[in-house]
Image (cartoon, rainbow, N blue to C red; front, top):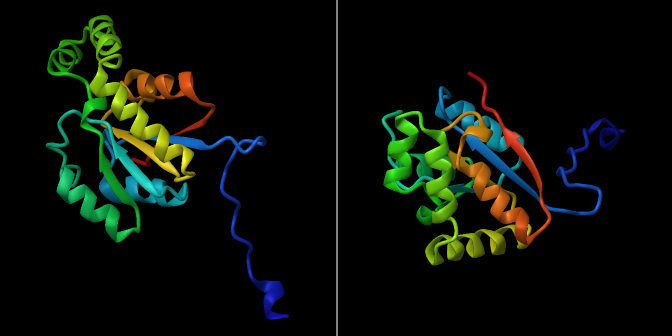
Length: 167
């Protein structure tokens, strides 16, 4: 009878065809615990940091501190710096010039270094690790990680789930 009262674990979310899920998450306005809760809820195995500069004025989101917090939750951390927005793109974003940002990033994502980072990301996804892409922006459509997802989708089928941490 004890076995009958055990709750079944929810199956990992995958598309009907077995297509892997690629998660994205932004930490703008969120706390580290809220981000960790979302990643844990989604059963993420690996957080891929897509920031060019993995430092943050927000407490807990700089590379070493974030990696340590993730490790405590059993989530691995990988910084794919070459997927980050180059300095001139970050300047355009700060100035509110999104057209210029997207133009700069479109060129950047085609560079050999960025393409090698995409190759690394594809290998991780193909290994069936549950991967989440991290950047600052809360809205994935206003973030370069949306462009990273598009580059992945050009080369393989994935289901995308944007995780939005509680405020």
